[in-house]
Length: 322
Image (tube, rainbow, N blue to C red; front, side, top):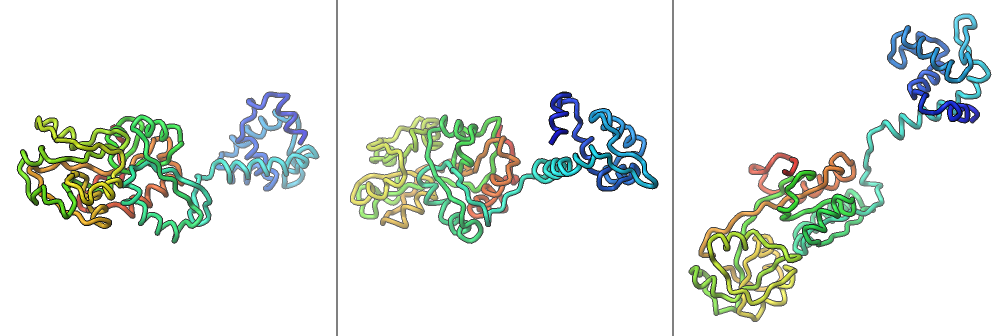
């Protein structure tokens, strides 16, 4: 490895890696013209590069002997090491990074509210069993500022759900589906009718769920109307509704998907709202630093395939948040 010592004494910044590519081609082909063809240079440019190579190593390196350019002893000693360097650059540095889910043994961190774990993960886990048996998922719920920081720092790979605070520069987003709101109550709750007037709705005893203290789109919608609900209980987790609604006189206005999940576990009735509720866009978000990462592309592709709905009304496959 004397040649490396020589480069260091000369200052490695003076060595063009393309010269090593030429050296490797000359060592294999023993011809300036064939080396020029192999590396895609003209013969005059190759001859000029060979002159620079000789100057860099202070050795003729390759000299004409009959029809071939034969290596000097110095070139013979350098050839195996140069070949290893060139092959390493081509195979380990210049090759696009890939991801093989079938053999990957790694963990991904997903940011989603508790209901996202119930709504989004079952189908994803089924696909993982089939396609990526060694991949692990970690689902977390975070406040909006912590979620952005986690994605920016690489502590989380993807955020899935309703994250309007991530619609800003530096993020990409992909639409999964649109949803709205449903009002639910215990099936035995006789205190509320199946259809309420605005007065009855506002006077009812409401459970309001604000994951991590977030204001929901419905809150802003009602505030814009000048309406204020009678809030009896405020929660941070949607799944708490499973134990709090049964046997109570409480109502909860929740995203449609959450109402569907709750109905699978407890007996509830739906109540027709006295207004047309707003729609919210459920999307997945990732930081721009992960846009071209092969493993992240695979992960968000999987979530998109499993959880996307209404193909005729979808947004473009992905777009920069702004």
